[in-house]
Length: 114
Length: 111
Picture 1: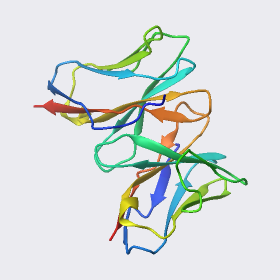
Picture 2 (picture 1 turned 135 degrees about the vertical axis):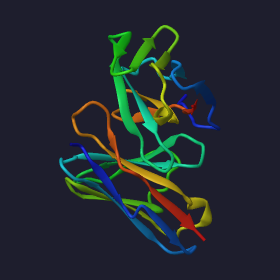
Picture 3 (picture 1 turned 120 degrees about the vertical axis):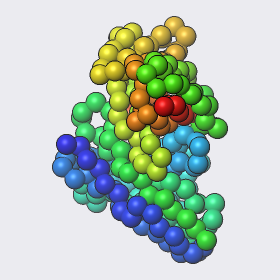
Picture 4 (picture 1 turned 30 degrees about the vertical axis):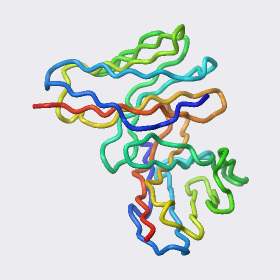
């Protein structure tokens, strides 16, 4: 149990376009999901906390108008990177809080902006 | 301050040896700690957790030690195997409902 999926697993987009990444809890409901960004050889940096039915809470320094988060249901949160630039290229990972020990993480989405 | 990831330290061990991975956490108010394993190109995988009212917890081939006095956490892996090669992160729940990740250690197991 406690499986989290992400789609797509990788995406390449042109600079200036927007990209949507989906995070789904497959076998449980998650009122709270989290979005992280990870650069190569670095740690996970929390971007925002996504709560079902309410606005996301963003970490300091994360632009909420650039990284749009929508937690429309108890099994789906989406992250949209708007007007993407090459510096947004990164590995984006979501996690879900289940009530079990630890948060459960998705497999990640590799975004490359050309 | 918060733990911020920079470049990963590495640990190289021989197959069959025991591995010890260390982590310093930042917030003395944190009351819950987790070790995660991350293989290349994948999301982190839960290994073991410990609450602040404990100083040791054992799982299958893994042991976590917590020293609150010096804000230090360690993960011990017994009889390390090639499949244990990965990056290991400690994470602390600082009572804000969020996990703060440490910088990580890359474990390389030599056959």
